Image (cartoon, rainbow, N blue to C red):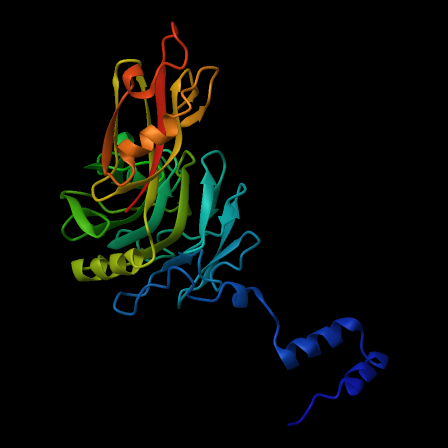
Length: 357
């Protein structure tokens, strides 16, 4: 075996500065770069070869798309270019896959690309995202800030927590299915110009079709996490295709997504004394833990709770017995169930549970 001559290397100090020596060491031994910590293909992979090449392909789990630091998020594949994280978008390492988190205040992705650059101006397209919404009142995944007819792109979540697709003005519409906060979804939006047809896909299933729709004629840069407002959401990957994908291709993309994601979320609620607290999770979900339970005078609202001055110490155990392992649960907020932790005080039951599916 031939060993490396270290004396010869250090002799080079007479002729080179330390930067050059460092470069030589990297070339000889290989650098422990970020890609070795987060290898390309970790978590979500690039779009499968069975589907057309995306014009935009951002993947937070792929080190060739995002290195793990900085404000550059690169679109990978043949149409490679750099997008920019604006406003303080946060990169989150998540175990099974990584994602970008948008605060809904001033975070967004600037692609630097128009519809014409991505070949979707007045044309067919498909948009795809692995996304979790922090606020289901409204939030766009893909958008422009323009408010002119057929020039404003609004693709994401519309009012009443429903998927939305529109090109500003009369050609947008919302699906009937409602989405839940803090749950990962695979969402796809397609547009077929010749048919004037928009289709929405939720977790691989077609949930709505609309006809008589007009094509997108926007000329401003397409952004992620923003339109004229900002969106509170988490984004694991996002893709734009310059064609209307077939059902089989959409199914393939969802299968890839599903192989990585274990979807999780939480639900919460309050019931006054002598009432019943009913908690429901999405179909096929299972309640796995109770993150808060208090019968008495708990503080807080909307799932952000703390124990108050009056608290039944058995609250956690009792709620777990009603909820763990079930898709939904109904818990009586009664002294006969929890005991009376503070006689003469009107009480309530606050609960927050977690689920996966």
